[in-house]
Image (cartoon, rainbow, N blue to C red):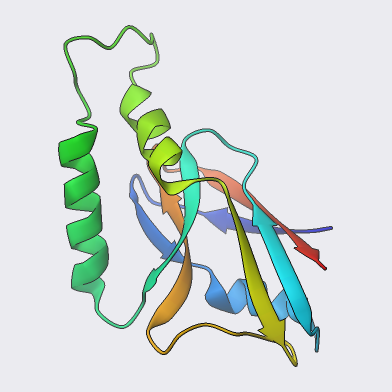
Length: 126
């Protein structure tokens, strides 16, 4: 298993498609991605228009606002845990000849909800 290290902003979608493909090295098969964190996730979304990422983050903020009167977690990042619950922490993707087989507009993103931090994405070729 290989690890990709990513420095993240406070919150945002970080395109990691290129870093994942660097690990593939001609691989054909499946690629399993996993983040060993509880306040960031993984997602496949449109990578051509940055407004899509902006809109997705805005909608997630509506679903899980940064401050909520019922939150009890002392660190104050319950919103980040909930957003991670919604995005998930793993992906299984097809690869062919060292490239991810994604749709025309699709890219792989690490979704940061509690940064800035140094994050890891674990990559396993299957």
